[in-house]
Image 1 (tube, rainbow, N blue to C red):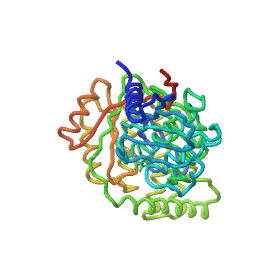
Image 2: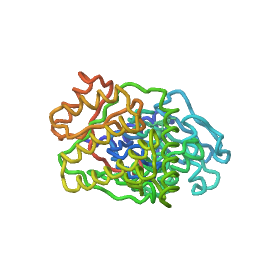
Image 3: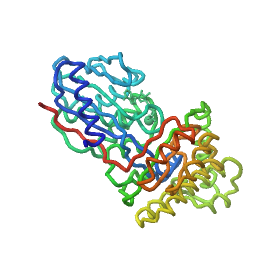
Image 4: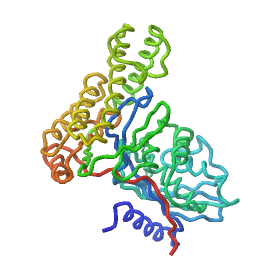
Length: 388
Ligand code: ADP
Ligand code: MG
């Protein structure tokens, strides 16, 4: 049987042929991701630990001589982006076209003079569920355009940096580097430990026999958009107070729990700072436990992460808490937690391979999740020639 990503690439090639009546010359693929642990610490310079998932976005395309970017997406049937390559600029597009145009602009100078790009996107990542459909879209677009210029193969960190720049400058989303890094540099059987302060990263092997179940809790509370900046500001205030009282520190990740007490922090600022400090320590501990194949410890760290997000950082919600508790009770589960920004969205559970499909079914039938799937840690993005 073909792997999920090869099958998606083949289906995308067929969709391209049906839409444009020509064969694509390149096809690219980039995965979505789920963060195993290290939540709400990227902006305080902490550690995150995502895996690439078995859901992703494929892009098929050709170079043209019409000087236009022409793009369609199966997620937005009936819409066609058509913009002269020379006119792509920040602020010039809205919605999904801003991501695609923004990435193409990063590679515009590498295309032959007067060239255009005609492309079709096709994704299995649910949009806006916290599984990073946006990075999968950006990275697959980047890999396609590189491939059209003859640069096929695996992605690297340069692609991730270009895609993040596109998301900042063209889509107007001030995201960190996690989503693009893992989509580019995921490796089968591995998670990626990313230091959000230095942006250094290293692979962490996940023991064989382990799967991850991702389940949507079915709600998105609007609260998230106003509460998120409040948490961010609390972390910034806490760091400023610690620096004031105890001397320079580059980020909360370089602080200790004792520093929070010694600097006289209290209330929300103290709670948020404590989450940031402890969550980064938990993320490094999880990486060490995974390398030692200590799955019970990994599970306990996931449970502690969820409790901290619920009680200290206060970004969970009753629906996420109920689903995490339900998942944690299932046979074969090592641990479970909310994943992503919170106030709704998805949970991730770490479990034995052989239990994964049962757990997935039970989360939907009895746990109240409208959508769930299981995945192992998958490989990152690639592009291949698609000539017939
Ligand atoms: P997430 O990355 O968690 O899925 P975001 O809000 O960051 O959520 O990104 C979702 C947006 O990315 C969508 O609203 C859409 O504009 C764009 N997008 C993602 N995948 C696709 C796709 N396959 N086709 C077109 N646009 C997409
Ligand atoms: Mg996103």
